[in-house]
Length: 330
Image (tube, rainbow, N blue to C red; front, side, top):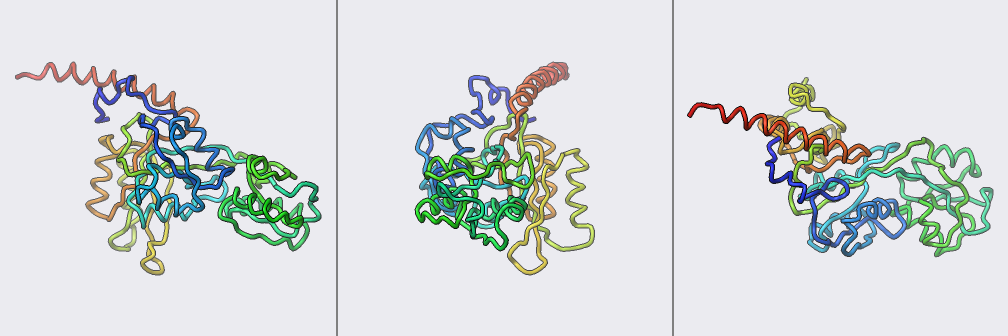
């Protein structure tokens, strides 16, 4: 790593997710109150020391950061069952110059929420955020009346709020148990997602630059091919393979320029300040159009331990190199 010893000073310790310490900020999140996004945000004590602002949609969260109305935006970007949240990915890739500063992963448990007293047989319509509905297809098919309709809402919590306001006894919302508490609904069924071990990844995005390296980091980029030719994707992947850089995500997305024109969204292990990562990005940029989306602390239960081990290893390696350089003849 190229990070200096000063940048690894324990007095400048990172926040709970390994990010840099920051003064209390105004954070906009994908609301309303009661969403999984709010739950994930409140798992980061340093991000909620200031003012938190619920915004009605993901584009509005990101636009508020761009406009300087909030310091950070917090939104979902990927689900373990349904994959990428395309509106977040596409806005960052094509319509924004914001950078990812942190990622947060939390387990997700979805519930069927109803007006008190409603039974399964009463339900004719299910409303929720489209990703949540998709995660519960099996439950809906097996347990609700035949022909039940699905209707999208801006978020899981917004579905609960809408149901509570209407008092509709033939509609159910899919969302977190927290939303039932907030909006006075009843939890009719829990853990209704089709696959166990469901989780969602969220990102904090901002305009303040790139967090320092922690030793357990992730870098996100978008690669646009300058020419669509046989083996072009292989050539991109070989840049990472040649440097033993592990890719944790590779996804193609339409570029919005024309049918069949795709770019590649790539998450890789490592930080921009790592020499191998920097060398790889340099070579990629010389051959393709590359958009940098951020280098940031990687989430995960072992994150803090990995970062501590990396810090010790880095100090040992730095001493070893300094000892060798002291032997260079003047």
